[in-house]
Image 1 (spheres, helix red, strand yellow):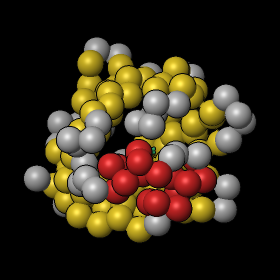
Image 2 (tube, protein in one colour):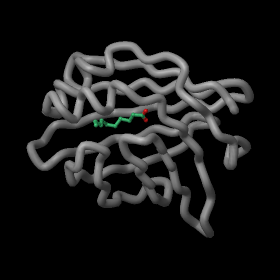
Image 3 (tube, helix red, strand yellow):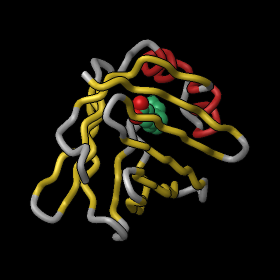
Image 4 (cartoon, protein in one colour):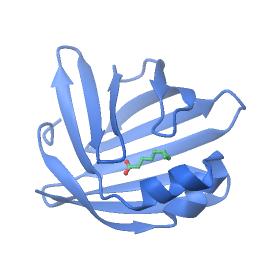
Length: 132
Ligand code: DKA
């Protein structure tokens, strides 16, 4: 993937609080997560990809092989299972929580920005990250 190794920093976020509420994230964690502007980088490690999302609130490393289900610890601490696939420069992720809630993420990587769209139930959150 041609955008491996680029760092993107969040510049805009819409509906993130509603999205987190839908995931069942509590008020204190939501406040902390709302206050930060994370940096996102896709790395390659052998056959694996690693999506690193860093902020002073939390840094998560999501390690995956495209098409293979893996265990993930979400930034709110929830233990979930995900499958990631690439469609061109878009990384698609389907994440299932133990309570059955399904969350989808699309992260479209471009030369100037990365756009993330996250959906849970009928709530969609959009976040834009500019290349650093
Ligand atoms: C991001 O990549 C946000 C990723 C959302 C993670 C799920 C919600 C976590 C709540 C603390 O900028």
